[in-house]
Structures are given as C-alpha cells and as structure tokens.
Amino acid sequence: MNMERNTTGLLTPGEMALARKSMDIARTLGAGKVRVTLNKSLLELVGMLDGEVDKVTHALDRSLQVALFVDGRFGTFSTNRLEEAELEGFIRKGIDMVRMLAPDPCRDLPDPSRVAKDAPGGRELGLYDPAVEELTPERRRALATGSTLKNRTGDGWKVVSEEGEYSDSVFDSIVMDSQGLCARHTETSFEIGYEVTVESADGDRYSAYWWDASPRYADILPSLATCAGTAIARAVGQIGPQFCAGGKMNVVVESECASKLLNPLLTALGGYSVQQKNSFLADRLGEQVFPSCLTVLDRPRVAGANGARLFDSEGVATAEAPVIEEGTVKMFFLNTYIARKMDAAPTVEDCTRAVVLPTGGCKTLEDVLRKVGDGILVTGFNGGNSNSSTGDFSYGIEGYAFAGGKIVHPVREMLMTGNFISLWNNLTDVADDARACMSKLIPTLAFSNVDING
Image (cartoon, rainbow, N blue to C red; front, side, top):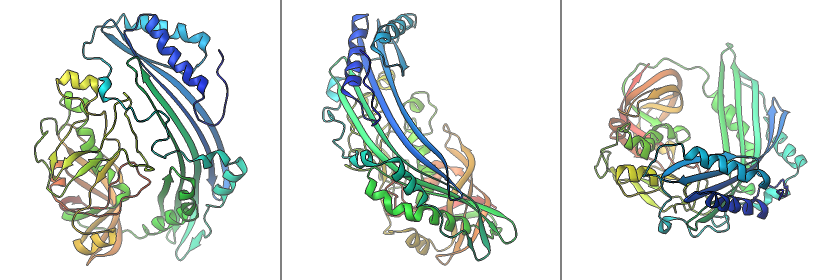
C-alpha cells in the first residue's frame, strides 16, 4: 500500500492505518509490547529582509517512531520512509538489534489506567484553526510584506538591518501502543518575529527582537502591524548605555526573558537529573525550599492555550498539579522508566505548561518598578551558564537602571551571579503580565539582594 499524498499537514487515514499496522507487524515479529508515534508537520514561512521578501519556505515532514520491548530489552527506531513495502524489513532489523542489547527490567509501557482516554480526535483542546486551510501563498506574502517597518529613521538613529518572518504551521501527532492506547494531538500556530538593528548618531549599533504567536489566525493579526515597531523601539531604547556600579541590588526581570530563571528549576525537577543526582533539588521533594510567595503550577489542559497538551510522549494523561506550592517542592517529573529505576510513583515526563502565580498585588511591569523603587531592570540575558548540580549561575544581562520607579538609562555588559535557591528566596514580587504566546506563563519577577557586577 502506497501512502496517499496530501499537503495539509494533517495525518491521513492511510497514514494512521500504517502506524497501526507497524504495531501489528512488530508484535508478529516477536515484540512483547510496542509503542508507535506518528508525527506530521507542515511549515509555511515568508522571510523578510529590509522590507523585501528574502525567502519562502514550504516544509512538509513526517516521521514514524517505533518503541520495541523485546525479551526484557528495549530500543526505539524512527523512519520517514512510510511505505508499507519497507516497513516489515525496518521493524525486523530493529527487533534484531534490540535482542543484542542488555536486558533492562525497568523499561515498560505505562500502566493503561494512566494513559489519556479523552484525546481520540486531536482537536479536543481547540488548538487547530481551520483558517490555515484558506491561506494562499499570495495571502502569506501580503501578511509578511504588510508587517515591515514603516519608519526607518528617527531622532538620533537609523535602521541598518531589519529581518522578519511570518509563518504558519500545522502539527499532527498520534501515539498508540499494544495495550490499547490511542491518543491524538492536532494544533496550528501562527507566528510573527522581527529583529531590528539601529545605528546611533555616534555610530554604535544596537539590536532587539520581538515576536508573537497564537494557535488562532485572528489573534495574530494585530501583532503583524506592531511587531516590527516594538522591535525597533526596544533597539532604540538601548542607545546611550551608561556604566552602573555593581553590588547587591534590586533586580526586576521582564516577563519576556524570565524563563531563563525558572527553566533551571524545572530542569532540576526532571527525572533524569534527579535520578542521576545531577540536580540541586534531587533530595528536596516535600521540603519548603523557596519562599511562600512562589507557587508554580502545571496547567496543561487549558483549552486554546499555547503549549496545552492532554498527554505526554508516553501517552500518559496530563493533569493540573502544583509543581512548587507556596515554596514547597511538590513533584518530580518521572516517566515510567525513571520512576521504576527510582522505585517511585510515576508522574508525567515534563512540566507541560508552567504557570507562575502572581503575588504582591502588582499587575504590570510598571507597577513592579514603582513598588521596588531603585535597581536594575533586566530585559535580556546574554550568554552565561548555570550548574545543574549546585544551582550556581552567572549570566550576562542587558536592560536599564531605574530610580524612583522610573527608567533612568540603559545598561549593558553587566553580570548577574548567584545561586538559584538563594535568588528565588529573595523573590519580592510576581506581576500578572505573563505573555500568552509562551508555553510557560512567567510574569515579571522582582528580587532583592542580587549580586550585579558592572
């Protein structure tokens, strides 16, 4: 059977039938248990350079991954050659290779009671917008060209480079296993992003980036008109940076880049890091490690929200759950394999959609600045590193000095150092301004007594 061809990005009945057939073939050839994942994606992109179309991309991709559990051994194999005539040979070779591996008794499919049973069609979360089917190449080009800068000069600056991209995409995935799992996830994404470089009157150059994304076409349209302008405003705002002496300072981190401080906590709660003792939170489950003002939830099932999912890569059903509740570490992210190695109860493999709850009464960045008074506003991180075992970090930062709740001047080439546990224990405020385009909803954050080197 040759697969029927389509260019919509959605899985066809024939493709899904082939995925199920691959599972049957694996069982016939000697696999005790099997999990099959079939992914398909379509990306349409129009790139702009200095107001002109620079590139057009059409990328259709699909892949089949087969997880084989054979005689107490385990292996995964993937292919993008989805032809039935080649499938048996591909799976037979995979099984032969798995049989040469050492046994691993911790490998298994998740308990059938834990898998998603409410995702049979893929569109249950409302993340697929049929409007994508009506977009033509001409319409995409018009959307991209209409988003470019309208003003390339200003008082004391001029644009020297403007790069932008409009894209829309479809992602469709189905996971099934030999214990009866069958779950599907279908979503669209519409995105716009611009990077602008300006040159000041004294010849110095400054760059900034801005973007937006949504599963819904109508929601991205306003940003098409404003994205490039926001990028240029952020670049112009960097002109004339001044030296700022370091020391222990108040630091406000803009929501746009605040994930740089939360992601290391989520990584430290990940099963592989915990099991390998490569995590500064490895032995802290159930302990209050952070201040009572910090609560992080996993909210994966919000209909229409970026990053929402009903199941993880094993097919395990997601659920809203506290990750850190009033400072107490409430969960590790343990898939079936890691949970068995640790002799612990499995959860989900990752934090699907982290939400940091607001605290302190501030709604916006401006509210936080007024409340904090004096310090450094971080609008971007430039390189640096962190140690997952100790929680120590050192990041380059850029942004602004502020005093009396007002921005005074831009700053650059400064260094923020410390330890994540002590940093988060100096958390003073969490605003309510997380960007909906992100899969992790992290608002503006304020910290006290942060080490800043000028």
